[in-house]
Amino acid sequence: MAIMAENLMSELEKNGADVKSTLDRFMGKQELYEKFLNKFTQSTDCTCLIENLKMEDYGEAFRSAHTLKGVAGNLGLVPIQTLASEITELLRGKEEPDIDKAAVQEKRLELEESYDTFLKIIKENLE
Image (tube, rainbow, N blue to C red; front, side, top):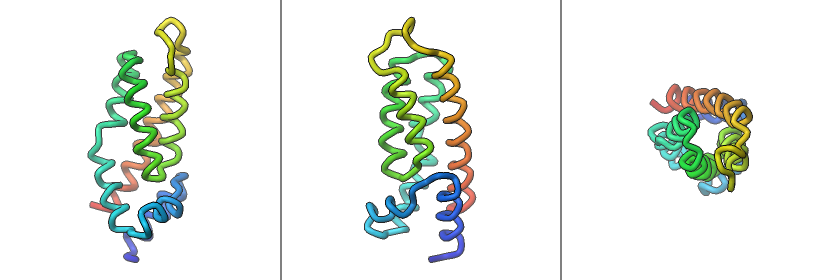
């Protein structure tokens, strides 16, 4: 394993990613995992969710959160998956008057921070 790859995996794990289980799902193919991590940095799933929440478009935010939850889960990015899941549940089946907007916005801020952290780690180690 290259030093850069070791550093990537170490940094991901330090920030809450489940690298071991994810690599098992990728049948130990670290290069493939890195390819999908790189694709994640180019994905708009998280940025769409953040923008939808900022605009208080909760229907689209729900769909974005649900998608992001799956993508992050498949990549072992547990903190992002967890926050996307929490946002999904805060929005599930609710009309705007029934949404706890303060809780949703708090989770959005946490998500932005976590997303930025993982983007930085991936970009610094794969580009």
